[in-house]
Image (cartoon, rainbow, N blue to C red; front, side, top):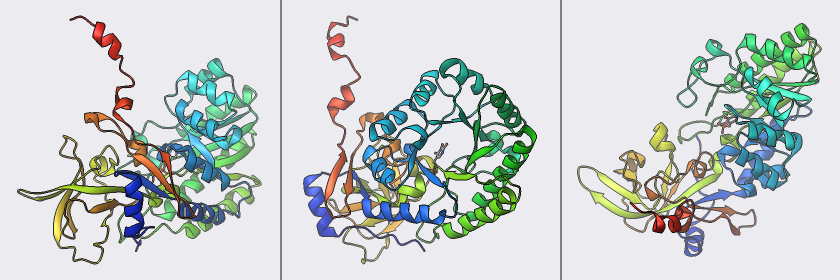
Length: 421
Ligand SMILES: *Cc1c(COP(=O)(O)O)cnc(C)c1O
């Protein structure tokens, strides 16, 4: 069972709301730090283990700075994400650049920062060389195709646009070796929100075996294996957390069997998790605007899918707490909605909740990854603020809410006044 508790009391959140109006995302610094330490500790058997926080999950430099202090790097996949890392003071091999369909300018920036480049395709070797030159360290992303099954978020590997086939990998490392690349890594990401520890052990095994085979065949040495992200979190209260210790033990067993016994050690193990690192420690705090009773009961919030679109796009479950009514009977089925003119703008459908009224504070759980980050402006919706609940109990605003001026910032209204039709 995953406990769905809040890191604040009703009085505390009312005080915060008095200063920062809803809706907003609130991150729990203490919990993020504790989780980061436990994650690192689980892999401490591997000298050189490093987690590169997947910036796309929560692209906020304050969060990135907290995680950097815990020894994490950044996993970036676009120019703005590279710039975020740079502005946070994360550079060089603290950055994993795992992109796909990559524009030349992004490779140029990644090279300028000395980031570790994780290539998505065989053709990108020549593309990178042409536009930014080849670095001394190259990683390649493997797509195991039919060897691995995917899930609803990531799809089936053989349908996925990512990565090299097995044959292409051998070819890729051979080409890079001939072009003078001396340091190598290998990467695979075939899971998303996966709660089965074994899944990652299998991925590690596949990658370790590839390291052994490619090293022998091409006489190159691998420095690291990047197991990537995709470690899941229990969105549902009845789900269990992934058994991180079992996952780490399983990976170590394969490491000993394949890497140590084969003479390929030392090999650093890297991860680039996003969801697991911040997901459970971010909360979307909103209020009920309207209660509507038609063919169904609706609780309309001041938040909408622009603030958290996972329920709308994946049908994802996010736990909901009505603050102060935790102990009241949860016996009314509500569709909990936002204000977007799209009928999938619902945080929950037929969710049994206590009776609600306008003004109630409603907290949506597990919004700390792929939450605010996926925000958009469709239908004139503005992204919310992000707040950080510090480990000393204070609250700082780490991103202000968008304003109408932000919405108009990309439009030339002066031009409009001169625009004749
Ligand atoms: C999205 C992504 C991640 C992070 O995924 P999580 O599910 O948040 O752990 C890591 N690496 C790559 C290449 C990704 O695309």
